[in-house]
Length: 127
Length: 127
Image (tube, rainbow over all chains, first blue to last red; front, side, top):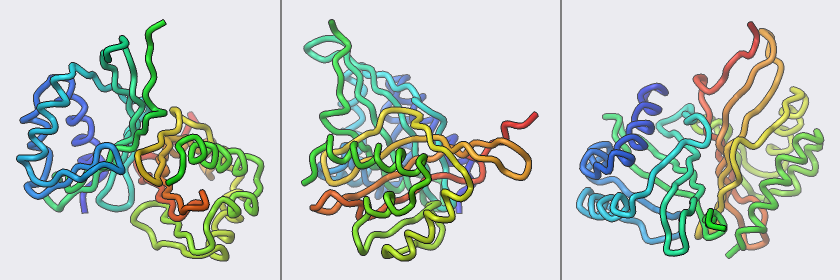
């Protein structure tokens, strides 16, 4: 089982690597056969190639992530965090409010990521 | 599929019923055969009887729930929320930082609840 502080550090590194626009560093947090479901309800991406492609596109949006509350752990190999995504949409500055749930393998890598957000969690900050 | 606002309203009702110390109202938000895993990594409770017993004990602690960030929906029958649990432990006022993930059945009832929190998410607010 992963220790809580190790899982929280990996979650924080995810935020930091995203904000550094470093998709390769993000992908190194993932297991080789990991899955990404972002948003929950969309097709699941599996494996480092698909996940790398996803994050290369994601960081190209110029989005920045800010924790909305401290990262939560669990009594298992899982952790969760609420954060806000600031990005510029065609209509101007916007925010997407997200909760990510990660599970971890025994090596401390993300085995799965699920991102909870829907259209109602996107808000334009333009006047 | 549930609409996002309906799922968010059920999540908010969960908070409100908890703070009203009304376990029966909480349990009416759940499907008959629902499951509760609180915290994630502990034994799963299934069915209204087990879930009712759980919430009767939970509200007896006098705990109060406060959202830490707006409730998130998804592109599926699932939603998530980050909240803080204020309660009085033997050592004094304390907070537990939690993220709940609910899935919904077609009738808009909670089919499953998973609560992400670990020992590192409990903090004493006493001096």
